[in-house]
Image (cartoon, rainbow, N blue to C red; front, side):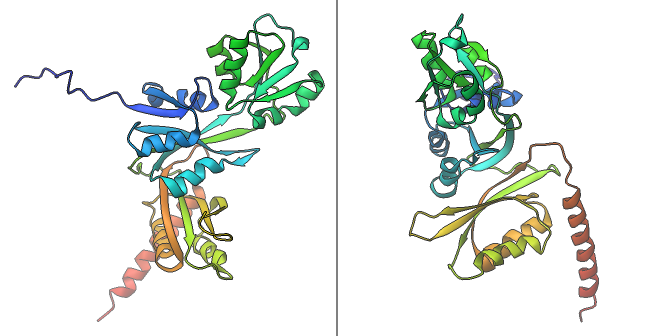
Length: 318
């Protein structure tokens, strides 16, 4: 058999989409992952564009932000996954938010009169900017990378950008002020999404779902939460979002510890779907971080022991 590969039939390179242009925090987080760094990277102007392109088959994977430690949930991303597209989370990434004042090479910081960035980034550096540039004018950009690109193209020492280290490298800018963020512990959580597929259980996993109430009645949220409490399942995120159908109609986005293949998690999801609400599954995936799932293992062991006990009782049935 001829083993020569027909180049016309060779599979296209896998493509991963991210919020562009080159130099954003999303790209920076993506490039830290060895397997993602090897793929063809495709920038998109909006985070939601990444998700729609993935759903429509233009790319194979997408990397999007879902939560920031200071600013909270990225609603545009979460809402798009909840209401508009069917995608499945494959893993999560945590990226430290280190912000720098980027200037045209050779610039003295005292020359800067305008600072360009996304408003969230500028707001996270207010303390440093008030101290060093109290009279500065703020100009909004679509991303920190676009801000750096604007400064590089302007080549004007009176204009600076608040952006990350990757943007400084890409656009050939100097770091006029390093690590100027007010909260050094700040992080952004990103997720890698695909059109289908659930990664295998690792022992340190998360499951993300959207719960739609079947009826807006007193105690409906409590009834939902009790399903998790009864099984000692920890919730790391509980977000209320309008369903965009009518005023006062809300759904709940939840992240819970554990994997779909965990019996206790599967039982909880089955019960929720059958008795309490409609459920949209967003994924079971490896969680970022190094701490072990000690509580989850303890609960699993308890339920396994209970299963053995129950089977012993059933064996006595006539």
